[in-house]
Image (cartoon, rainbow, N blue to C red; front, side, top):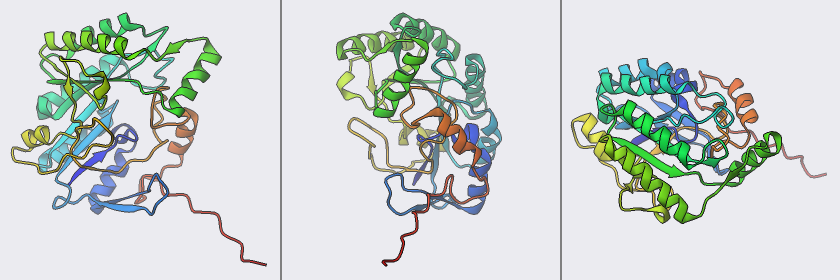
Length: 302
């Protein structure tokens, strides 16, 4: 089994102590986001064969990665670095710090252990197409030799994402737009070409409708990558989370609405303020990252 930690929140940046406690316990409890019963994910070496971590700040987690490496427990780090303005990414670390962390992960554990994500691509007054071309060129130059893959995707304007962006537009006047598919494909092709010029393979995450010849489908839960890191075959069937997803099957131990980075385009957070309040209630010693809310008691019939 592959454990994902987590595409729902940034466990390495904010919940590393909880993760280490759950490793020691050998399991994590996970609240069902769709209202069903909670479930248990085993984390012991016999059951958790590999890990995929998703983060924007790996520094608080490097000791944990060291410990996993010493125990020969393979992992891959999916690290997002976009360099967007603070209006869109309120609390992420400085771009050059993030680049340095990717290079440090590659130095310690090898370039197959880390993937650079430049996603989602969002078009605003502050981030027009030319911004993305400049930023990808700068980042690809800085990361050449440290990573072998750049994951791209365009922002999907889910209900909560649209609400956050419209609120930003009302409060600041910053305009944004969701381009037509042809414009998206053209920009993705240009970004893919820039990455390729620096020896970085560009891939597209779960958006087959935006496919262009220079992009291959991304497998963020990638058994080939994990097998290379492990030096042995990691077995898992392909089981994507949505159409076009090429990921291998995994179990995620995160929770929605709990990442306090404050990225306004995030699909996993309804309101950044809510996520910050929730983070303040986190118990690193609990079995759950966040325990499910208890239903209100039902009054007996009169």
